[in-house]
Amino acid sequence: MKIFAMVVALSLASLFATACSSGNDTNKTASSPAPAAPAAPAKEAAGEDIPAPVRAAFPDAQSITKQHRDLTPAQIAAIEKEAGGKLDDTDHHSYLAFSNAGGARKQIGAATVVEANGKQMVVVYESRNGLPFIKEVRADGVAQAFLDQFKGKGHDDKFQIGQDLKAQGVDGAAAKEAADAIHRDIMTMETLYGSAHSH
Image (cartoon, rainbow, N blue to C red):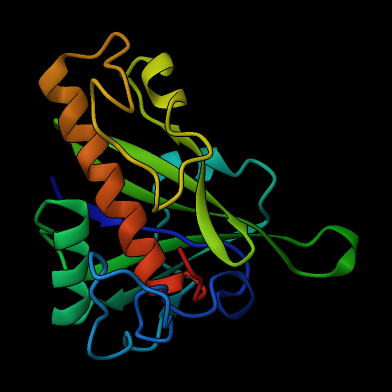
């Protein structure tokens, strides 16, 4: 499973201020190790091609920009430990959707593209008190009942098939692979963009 791209909403400063596991959270539990260094500054590229499924997730957007950040080795280790799986790519991609309604540029959403079982899933995020939560997951050829279970989940939620989630029309092994990929995705979003909070 390779994370092809990830996305965050509105300006990163206002949406997901600092990483949850950046070491700023003094109430962080021992099961959530803090990375040694913050992420590299985001790089933005408005002119790059935006995948069609990402565009489809934001039909009201006047523009969508692509950015990327490189995860540090400490951040990778923390994500892999908490999510229980390996990250294939340290280059984090995100797509930010903007609207110009009312004459002001306003961010209306963020999304990531995750691959599992040979299928691409678009994970759309919203911000709640500076923390990323899944608004929806879209994927062609995947049962909607399965994808709907991810709505509203945050990085503290569980993603175990058979316990927290059901296969819902998806093969058990494929469901586990998809759930694991989405879990790593939201952990990466939280690491790079989530504001500090206590558990």
